[in-house]
Length: 152
Image (tube, rainbow, N blue to C red):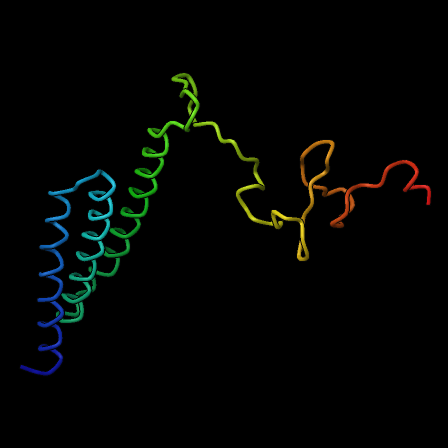
């Protein structure tokens, strides 16, 4: 046995032990999110096992197979996250059955932290007090000028 094969064997043993613990977490749970995360980890472990197989046998088919498995795992994770987000109703609000998407309480730029909450130094975006929207008309960080200030 070459040293490379010994390293592959040790990595395979570590993957096997990890796979057993991940399958245990899939079965025991306790929540659906634990099961979803363990499913993602199991896909990663399968891709790593395929990488070990590829390193040992130099199989050319394994590269595209690993790439397609990781892409499918990404799509399934995003789909599951959207499913869980729709199931959770916002606190203090009833969920309507007619809407396709859950309503949000934040505006499009409030989720991206472009400004400091206290308005202190480093404030890169201020809100116009009359509309509650970011002041983008002047390109500055100040609020738009009123009639008297514009005449100056």
